[in-house]
Image (cartoon, rainbow, N blue to C red; front, side, top):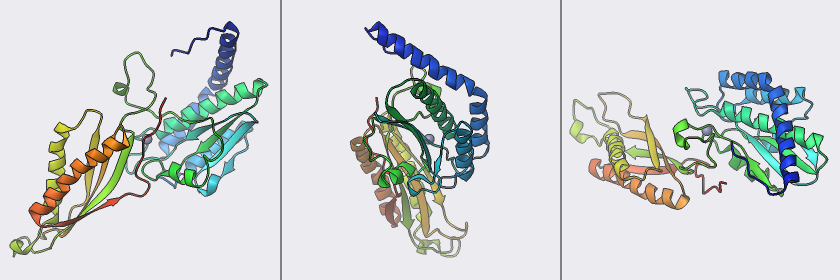
Length: 309
Ligand SMILES: [Zn+2]
C-alpha cells in the first residue's frame, strides 16, 4: 500500500504514529474480527431481517466499551455507535445483508469486518491523541436491492455536516490492476433495477394454441434480444436479468410472464442511454408476439452518479 508523502517530516512522523497505533488496535482484535466475519458469513440474513447480524455486531462493540444505539433512524435493523467530540464527523458504514439462496455471495460479511476494523483502528487514534473529531459507525441494512442507505438518507442520517462517509466493498481480484490492493470506486456504479411484465392470452397449447398470445415467447425473445445487444455494449456496462415467472403449465400458453433486470453503467446518463436500447428488445418482443408489456421500476433501485476518490 502506498501512503501519500509529506514534505513535512513532523507531519510524516505523526501519520506514522497514527498508522502504527491503529494497526496495533486492529491486530489486537484479529481473532475476534475473524470470528465476527465467520459468524456473519455463516448466518446469512436478507435485507431488513438482519437481526442476528445487528445483535452480533452490537455485542462486539459493547464488549469493547462502545455504547450502541439500536434501530438507528427508525430502521429496525440499523444501529450506530460514536466516539470523540467536536471537530469533523466521519461516518463508517457497515453492511451485513445477504442474497437470497446463496448467502453472502456479495461479501457483505467482509464489509462488516473491514468497517469494524477501521472503526477500532481510528477509535484508538482518536482516544490516544488529543484532537477534536468524531467517528460514527452506522449500520446500513438491506443493501441488496432494499435501498437501506436511501431510507437512512431520507431519515436524516447524513444531514449533519459530515466530512466523509466511507466503507469498502470486496471485489473480484481481476477488477483492479496488478500490484494494487483495491480500487477507489467501482464502475457500473449507476444502476437501474426494474421488472418487466408481459401480458398475452392463455389457450390450451395442444387444443387451440392459435388462440393464444404467448407471454413466455415474449420474455424469451426479449432475453435473446438483450443477449445479442451485449456485443454492442461497452466493456464497462452490464445488463443482466432473470425470468421470475415463466408460466404455469406446459400445456397452457402463458398469458403472463415477469422478468427482473439490472442495467449498469459508470454514469446515470449512460445507464439511461443503455436502458433505452434494452427497452427496444421489450418493444420488439411485444410487437412480434402481440403481447402488452409494462416496465415497473423497483423501489429505491436507481443508484445515481456517486463521487469516488
Ligand atoms: Zn454488495
